[in-house]
Amino acid sequence: MKDYKIAVIAGDGIGPDVLAEGVKILKTVAKLDGGFSLEFTYFPWGCEYYLKEGRMMPENGLELLRHYDAIFLGAVGYPGVPDHISLRDLLLVIRKGFDEYVNVRPVKLLKGAPCPLAGIKREDIDMVVIRENSEGEYAGEGSWLHKGTPEETVRQTGVFTRKGCERIMRYAFELAKKEGRSVTSVSKGNALNYSMVFWDQIFHEISEEYPEVETHEYLVDAAACHFVRDPGRFQVVVTSNLFGDILTDLGAAIAGGMGLAAGANLNPERTFPSMFEPIHGSAPDIAGTGKANPMATIWSASQMLDFFGYEQYGKLLLEAIEDVLVEGACLSPELGGTATTREVGDAVKRKVEELFQR
Ligand code: NAI
Ligand code: MG
Image 1: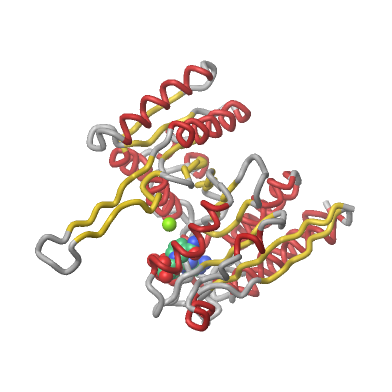
Image 2: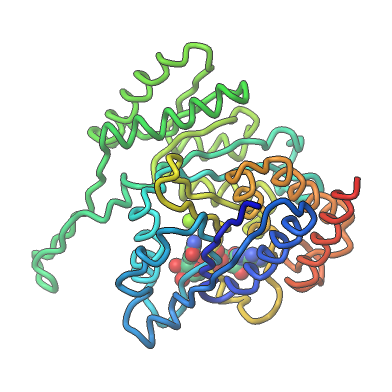
């Protein structure tokens, strides 16, 4: 029997609450299937750990995670610890250290999910954003000179390598080819005259390898406008680290809210563990209230099942979430309901069990 070892980093704020529901659902699926097992190991890293130990995770953190089949992460960040520390010293260390260069973020309006856009059909919001996750604007390169003087100078350098651009674009094209969908590149070649001109050039080169795949290109500002006015034109979207970060929050806003937006950080070669997480943060404003929606985390659990090769269960989890949304009886406050995080998780669990019987 295949035994998957999963490292759990619940993190801060609502992280532990939503993750508990994700773990519950994964355990349910494994039990119903009976042919594989999941073993969860908890790592108590995050801002509380930082306040005690002076770091977000131990120095040998990557060593400790290295041999797990996947990492399941809630969210990190909390008032009292600067955000650039909580993000850079844990999340970005893992994404970079494990070469999780593909960030897969579905922007799909599920049945029953609310949409703030007028005149848009549900089917019109069904894309997947493939965000470059290892370099680009988040490479962390630059300098801070002459601190506190009138000459103070800060440089934040984007790093775009040929290898990095080619591999993320190939990933997007392979996905589009497999699913018979188009690829849209989002860049900003008019203003970023090195990085994004290079990005565009490589997009053209790679697109020649896939003559059967339809392509489109937009500047990021225009893309933001189209996300709202005409999201139906996007299918597979490939973009840089920063643009993907921003566009997928916009994507979350048009597809049901932050409580419904999931993401997978993939190392497609499987040399290192991949990491699955909701895209939202630790939501300090609702932490400890039981108001967090665990659906994004459950969706990222479905991405984990896809990655393990159980696509039938990945789909089943999405159907279960849709059933709960359509029924409307057990929704978190964000979606207009009064249910707690745990109650929503239990409702999804019941749907999973029902769907499994069918
Ligand atoms: P956030 O995503 O935590 O919250 C934004 C808004 O969405 C808040 O009003 C929050 O209540 C709401 N929200 C988020 N998730 C929700 C859920 N599951 N159910 C219902 N409502 C939800 O972003 P914010 O406030 O900018 O950041 C808070 C902290 O999280 C910061 O320390 C930030 O650095 C960190 N952060 C961490 C991330 C990660 O660990 N992957 C990603 C984004 C932010
Ligand atoms: Mg973000």
